[in-house]
Length: 294
Image (cartoon, rainbow, N blue to C red):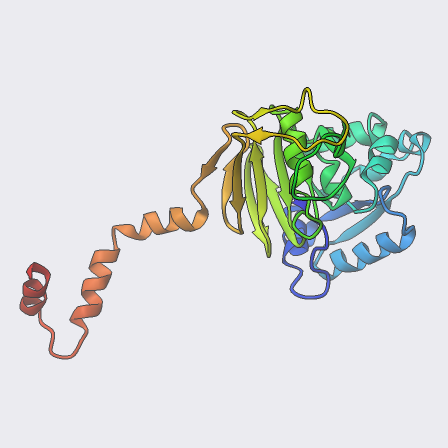
């Protein structure tokens, strides 16, 4: 579960509730990995209160601040059913955890079925390629952002967060222009995508997921100088609100659950409409047949 940041913590908490449910609901044991945060133990306390309030059986703290600690503390992950990566500084998270015992354990657990969620910086760090830092703006420019290695749970994508709020379309376009094999994903605040084993992404929350596909892109990114604006042509942009799905492997839209449900109900609709009309005062089978022919 990849969250664009600023998820609802005071209202219905729909996204956080879904994370707890994916982790096992009343049987869930969740580790909060808070290395990215500069808020110390208070961020863990906040998520412990939130997750236990949403029904989690146990919440553990995991906050290594050095690679030595990250190579010693992986035992905290034993038996957990979900791991949640907090916001903060994604470069701090990956430089401390990437390639350590915790980093390797996280990959192993996720492959075996443990749900991993990340919000804000934690969202960016989930992919193999990560936005380390960058500037805001509508126009893609040279040197607008910097890629580095992420934790590697999701491949061939770049994840950016707080997307509309911080106006990050320019930097995502610039990254895709430089690396068109990577799929750009920008997530609004209080918005998440859930990616399953089949690499089908589904959107939930108040905002949208912006997907930038550079498979057929043309750009001058390889020769632009300094901070020049980039020519980017042929990028395919998808704007996906809640309920819509996307195949990350095939880079195609997948019918939403609403559309599938509508298709399943489609055959029964004519009969249902006929029943509604027949229930009107004075209607008869013969009148219905005449009206349907006229």
